[in-house]
Amino acid sequence: MARMGDWFMMRQDSEPTDDSRQEGRALLQTVLPAEVLASLTAKAQTAERLQLLLELLSSAVGSKTYEAATRSFVTETATRLQCDRVSFGIVTNGRVEVTALSHSATFTRKTTLVGAIAGAMEEAFDQRQTVVVPPLPTTPTQIRRAHDELARQFNSVALCSVPLTDDGRVVGVLTLERGAEQSFDRGTLDVLEALAAVLGPILDLKRRDARWLGGKAWEALRGQVAKLVGSRHVGFKLAVLGLAGLMAFLFLATGLYRVTAKTVLEGSVQQAAVAPFQGYLETAPIRAGDVVQAGQILATLQDHDLKLERLRWQSQRDQLAKEYRQVMADRDAAKVEIKAAELAQAEAQLALASDKLSRTKITAPFAGVVVTGDWSQRLGTPIEEGQVLFEVAPLDGYRLVLQVDDRDIAAVKIGQTGTLLLSSLPEEEMPFTVMQLTPVSTAKEGRNYFRVEASFAKPPSERLRPAMEGVGKIAVNARSLVWIWTHEVVDWVRLKLWAWLP
Image (tube, rainbow, N blue to C red):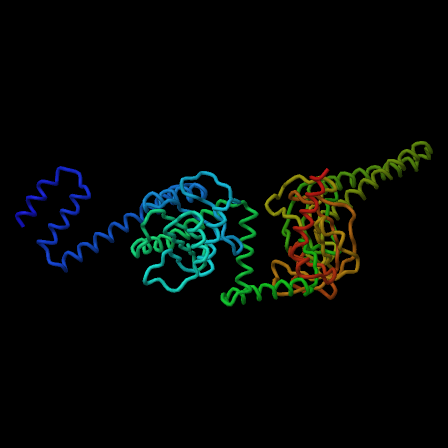
């Protein structure tokens, strides 16, 4: 142990050389048991192989592009493993194509050398295993004809071709050549096979990322087709079969095409209650939404001024009647004619005042529901003659107004039937029939709509009220389900293309 300590103190300040390493090993053999020495040696070899593996992987991973990664990797492998030449080939359509040679930025693929290397690579690819020349004692029986031919033509003493795999498939082949009397041992093969298992997915991913979009799509399609025709991926096959069945059903199955439109309920007749003359509002007990009977008072106007006016004209009529009788007694024909005209005028004004007094009460024209009008909070408001105070619609007659989009109006015809669902009565379907198409569109919310009127096919429910809204669907004809669900998008694309193309 003292000798070992002295040797270590002498060597710790100097760089280790091959002689110093051999001297150190000899010294360890004299002081350590054989079992301990073998264990230390195995651990040192494992660490050295792991370091070599990481360095070779870093040469490939550190490059951004696929071409640069393969060139850097084969050159670094040739340098670290003391090879005359290292080649890499990619598997394409069942054939191996040489894509990188060590210490060569470019090369011609139609040379004899590249052809011989490709043949050796395909030999390893066909056998799906590492091919070594000269073979090791533990190497199974292999076909090495292409490797022997490569060694004979280009004086390569030792050859080794290792397939690179990714998910069970060979994606490339790595071929190493040595010209010196140094064959590939078991340790080197272990490193190469471990390297191939890790490097295969990395290089294949870089290759796929470097392709054009068309190439990526084609390979993805081929991969999916391979799943369909292969013996595995049963779940994928069932999913594709189900999707194909669904698409066939959608293209072959038909359904009822219906035009959907916002629908508003209106009364079949809608009558306005207007102010008969200018005045002031006295009472207004009724407002929108109330159900009224025929002749029921909706509102009243103040009659104080009208009563005074009637009293004034009544007094003036009595005075003129007295004067008329006096001139009649005097037998003055001219004055009789004048007083008769004045008396007729007074009676007309009196009749007008009486008529206005009889119309101070605004009544419902028929039984129904008040659609518009609420004056209960504006009593005493001045009212103009002819001003609409209320609108009344009957409860036993309705019409439907559908706002049909201009994209769908061509499919709507008079006589077609449909179904209505109101927002307030979503549980009750109400059939209707289209009665009238209005050839005038209305712009609303950035879209054009046509007014389509319809009537109920059967007596409406008693719960209906004017101004209710809902969704109506007009039945057109039977179409394929795919057309029903996609025709709006197809029409939009067709219109955009028509506007864009010259």
